[in-house]
Length: 92
Image (cartoon, rainbow, N blue to C red; front, side, top):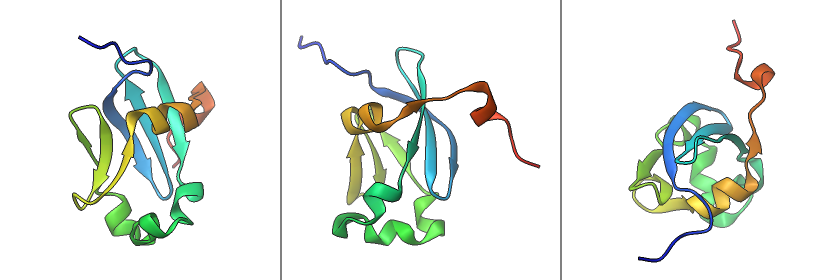
């Protein structure tokens, strides 16, 4: 069995316009700022907040929207920044 370099996505911890906090299978939690992706033609639909918030994980491999727009676990892991305690505090 092939070993993958970057961990798979375990769960979406928090999703808000336009960032996603993810937990990976190795226990790391990272925040991915989505603005860089939303400027690309393939991701234009995700500028609609109601659609953006409907992200789902597919087998740990990727985040998917509408079964047609996706980002791989590798991209999300490499682009994400570790979540600090201040980042995870809920706003009131």
